[in-house]
Image 1 (cartoon, helix red, strand yellow):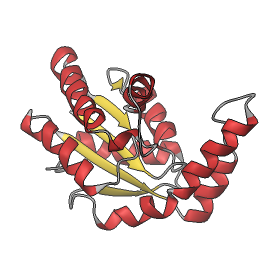
Image 2: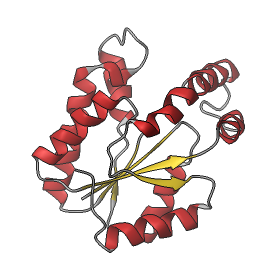
Image 3: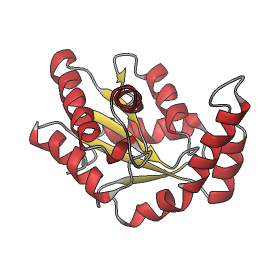
Length: 183
């Protein structure tokens, strides 16, 4: 099973996954950004967003399938994924591999997202890079928040302004009670 935690940059995906990991020690954490960082070292990313690389999407799905098959443990995935075509491509590959995906989206107001992004340090000691990353994240807030209308119909929307503990309680209750997973 995969628990995919989606949302805008600054919505609390990694924080929630860290909370889930503490409560669900057998789960593995898989961050698809690492695949993107590796690809960036190998090939040019013309748009600046590694999600636009077909190879990234294929590798994300293939590695997720491999992790589930090899380790037979739940996989927690903190990853912003809002392009409808990319969601369908990745989740479709997971479905084709008979993997259950529970898809959660953290809804957070744009004002709170800006505040959280401004409060983060992405590259400690490198203020110029930090500011560039902050601007990149903030430039995507509108696209990420608008995506709620295009995500799969069985996406579970959560109030991303709840505490990590409250969010983890909600996710674990849904996953463990057999709520319908994403198709």
